[in-house]
Image (cartoon, rainbow, N blue to C red; front, side, top):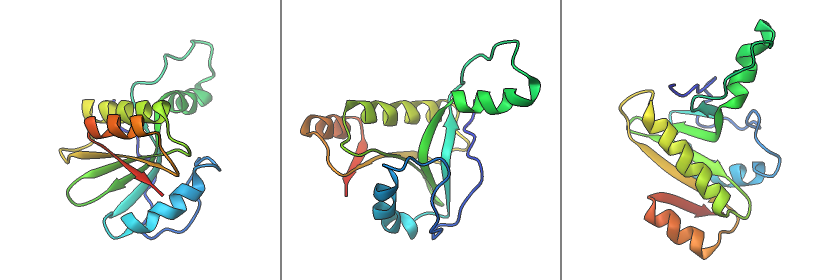
Length: 145
């Protein structure tokens, strides 16, 4: 199942991203200027993966929305002319955050929207040294802001 990016936002869009957690928003506001000149568009809450099988008794008008919610969702996706940026925002990033980034990248690469390569980022206000080393081993860039 290819990613469902949802609506695009311009690189300098100053608003609060749709569905972004209140705890993630300060990290986003700190990191957005660093990427602004690189991206041509932002996407938020981008859905990847197959999602869950929906029960047969779900009303048809709710089915699409519930199915999209059951897919894994990336905090921010940046599109550049040459590659995609997958960004997970997490205060006090630990193993769970690293697992999210690895899963998102794997699902994206399984059925990408195009042939551009992907770069995975974990953005946090602090990170455990073991998580940092594991991220390096997995080709995930950790940005502590």
